[in-house]
Amino acid sequence: MNKKILSALKISFFLSIGIFFIWIFLRQLTPAQKLEIWESFIHANFAWLGVALAIGFFSHLVRAMRWRMLLEPIGYRPGLVNTFLAVMIGYFANMALPRLGEVTRCGVLHRYEKIPMNKSIGTVIVERSIDMVVFVTLFFINFVIFFDKLESYVDDKVFTPLSQKFRYLEDSSFYLTVLISVFALMTILFFLFRNKFKGNSFYIKVRELLLGFWHGLRSVTRIKNPLAFIFQSILIWILYFLMIYVCIFTLTETSHLGIGAGLSMLIFGSIGIMIVQGGIGIYPVIIAETLAIYGIQNTTGYALGWLTWTAQTILIVFVGIISLIVLPIINRKVING
Figure (tube, helix red, strand yellow):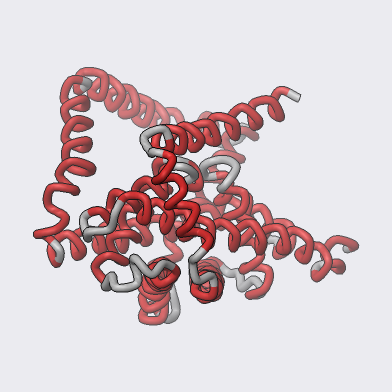
């Protein structure tokens, strides 16, 4: 019961943050501006949202294919259907609680493909690390190419907050030193007395957990086809970009925007999703601010932000629910066995 209450509180917390951002933005609008946003929704070309959904679906399929490539070097080759359904259930779970999806999708493969969770979680961390490398690379490419438009925006929204955080870390250097010293001391003590713990059941379980985790992390160095893995990692982000870019054509006022605007929407919108779970509330605000750089008025940008966010969310929720229903049906033999 306590766990259920805690989970409910966490979900309510992130939902409240999203609602707060919605309220902050809407309270600044006049009735005429609110009507303008509503008009944008009514006259939007929803056919382009259908295209965006198809592209998003394919991006998640490619992610499942890439995950299989990471699992293969550690001795497992799960079915593509099960892997894809696990990925979508993971995305669906992530909308409720941060990082819950990573554990959930590993749990799905453990249940239906008998893959140890400690090993699969290691591969998921590899996945996330590679995605972060691609994201940071795209961020700087976007910044360099469109420097004249993005300089002041990035300085205010990204570099200034980061510099404040680093300043805080400088003030906390003493506590960081103490933490590192304690960790180093515990490591030394462990290696000095590890022989005394070898027969302990708790030690054995922790050791097996860490070894499996390490095998999962090492999988990236033993991929059979590294070029295909790199291609899929890049393709995922190309598809993410295309999913957002085609949404631009849903509104007449934004249909003239080019690749630069789409790439900026991808980069800064992703930051919004990282900040608030699922990006609810904050994602449309960030899209509106981003498109203001390209001469799009605030209300139009906000409407496009909601349309883009809705397309992404509908895909995750709909396919996630379908995956929960279909998964046990196509794995009857595993359940009955």
